[in-house]
Image (cartoon, rainbow over all chains, first blue to last red; front, side, top):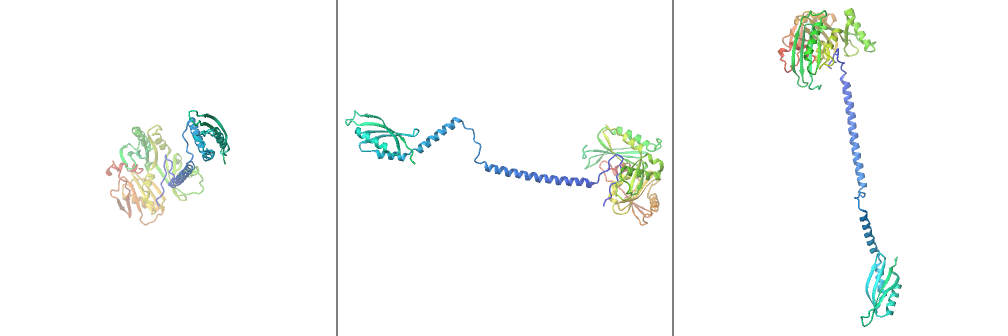
Length: 174
Length: 277
């Protein structure tokens, strides 16, 4: 082993043994290595959390701001579609067909989905035929509030038929 | 100052001369400047007064740039002794007092005016101590004002510089270290990495014959082994080859590594200063 240095300096502070510096270096490297490993683990943890958060939030994307007017329009359109879809077309047509007779001709069938009502325009040979038709409509389960709105004798026709209008409301049928 | 670009100045201070070497660079050191100054050794009441005055004049000239200065003290200015190990010494003050006591036993009252140092080598064994006139240390420190660009970083005895430079050669085996200056020889014996004797003697030691006589006397006084032991010599003169023999002793020259900017033939005046490189 090489002899230790001879320290007889009159100005400089005697050198400390090298092992002190080496020890500090080793400790510093160990601490630095530990910090690097912790930092890496923390980064990985953060990445995992970010990934999990991303999976949870896929159906919660921030939506861009939509004007209130457009939302209301869309809501109305949706309501209209829903009303159209909820009209009991089958029951309504069945009721009209059931009420039909040979002396009454149906000219126009006009549903009002918003008011959930139905307006019928027809032509009857006689006044009695017209009233029987209205009565049969009033007996239909799918309709309620059936009433005669207008009637008019077609004088320009030699057989003098009666053209009339009937108003009825949809009845919710389970 | 960066350790890579620093400018180091090494100064060897002797009773009649001063040698300065300026070295630049850490990886590829090169001698940037060198100069020697001589004066009458009889100058002043104390042997170091001429050296102190020359140093102050020189520092005033070299102070134009940042540099670190190391002063190597000739063994003419230093006394050495071996301080025996003592388990009773508790702190640095007690240790210094004991070192002073050891010097006072040899040199008497004069030692009170000396600045002493004790080496930190292996505990439990005798250790080398040195003593330098306190006023000389004051003069050297005073030559480097606090605001000067040349900073005094070390003042070390020649024995310290030489031992630290070549200590790898002294490991394990028993060996002598001989430092020769004009009218002075310093001889130390090392065994198992411990110093067993140190002698700083005034006299004429021109070559191997005188060196062998000194070694014979010293070996006789300390009772060292009669078997031949290697002697490592650092001397500016007296040893032309790499080794020499005289009276059964083999002297091996301690050579300095070549340094750029200073030819081998020009090294001798600066060899003491370069030991501290």
